[in-house]
Image (tube, rainbow, N blue to C red; front, side, top):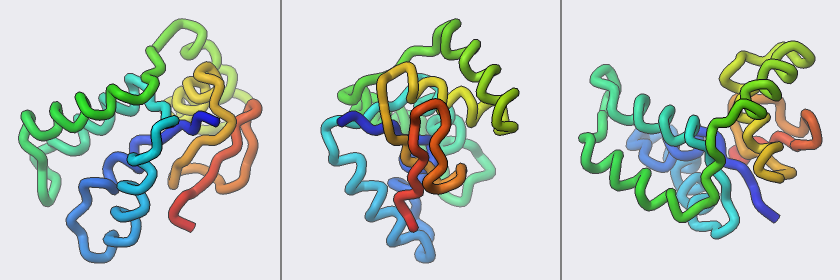
Length: 136
């Protein structure tokens, strides 16, 4: 069964913060799975956050781009008009931010029944996608 990974999973995998060590190890373990799905949005968000100058430990472009290249082994859900429309419907119905709604819409479009994210309500089912906080 394919599972969708939110951006925070990718970001925790590169964390150097001592108080995030257990989250880092869990994120790395998830990224070892073969049946993960990410979206173009997730990869874009990872790059923007991982390389931003205000980050305590920003990654250089080459390293961040190389990590993204390795994650292209996963199924990558493209951004499409149906995902946009689905995100707008999810936002309206559930009140999530547009960006969180787009993640859920992409997970649904990719056929994922589970979305790993720290940012949403653990256990909630949205449009057939169960949200799971892997750090609980």
